[in-house]
Length: 436
Ligand code: DOR
Ligand code: ZN
Image (cartoon, rainbow, N blue to C red):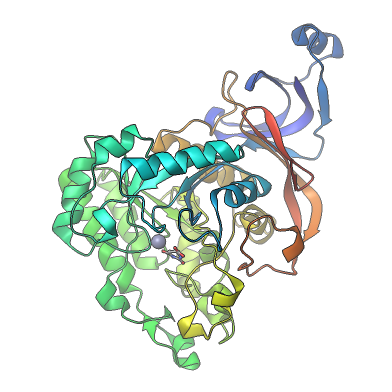
């Protein structure tokens, strides 16, 4: 049995943010109370050994749930695989990750869904839930067998990495997904507007002499998908929202009652395109980093709930690929191991976002919206949990990363504030930043 003493518990599911003692037994949260005596705990343990943890000065919250990770297995295991990715997840404070479907081959049938799910179970770290594609071969034309894939364990459907350009296919996808109860996750990008763009179109792209992707490449598809969700009453989730206009469209759609949620990535909350230099391929990401006004709108959207969730879009690539010239390097940032600390350092410590909101947006809201286990520490809940130490400091070094990927903008930077103990179903899987 685990006894976490005097720890600051953040659990938005029960509107709790206060010092408490927490008991965990048999993989579940047993009790949360203001104080417990040794005798009381001994009695509850009924002879079982007790692991007591002094939680003073630390936070305990439900394990983070990341609805957007690229694990690259099958097919691109030089970038990442399910074992390395799910180890990176628990190192970063994630107890559940949703694995995107743009692998090689893409996850467009039940057998492949089952493969990803089983590989996740075999790894035995974070819960790995497969996302299936929306269309066969991710070609944007013919819908997959959604009901069959759900039975195989698909948690949602997405052609992420690519947009479904054909509006009628997207409309049908929303309509058919209703029969499964699962969400369609949309990667909003008009491929004609985006063209061969490498970064956001604006002053910075002009300065760098690179082709730009206009903000409208995202926002016109956000508008389309919101209208289609409204018409079909399908369940829509918008991935990696990055522009002022998108936030505004989502805010208005929610007021009308459209069944939509949206996520924002840490890198869009932290960086703007003006920081980019021609060698910074590590910050080349899709959708691209936007302007200061975009960043402010995203922060405001996260604060007021227009943006429901934070998600990493963990996109591992090899160093060789990222060493190419800017225009030839792949899009993506690897972030599972650093995202929470980066958000803590850049947004929570300066008082821009509260830690309570971060936990809500990265654990409770994803669990609610995607109908997943976790996201709560109410007694009886599964003990997927994180102990976060605001004092623990670490230099982000290649040698300590357990992900195969090194494409993080935080390499060689020092962060203070890390998850230092992580439990999956009551089993300790990370301690002092070491994956067990
Ligand atoms: O930056 C990105 N990388 N954005 C995407 O939409 C896809 C992802 C990837 O698969 O590398
Ligand atoms: Zn995407």
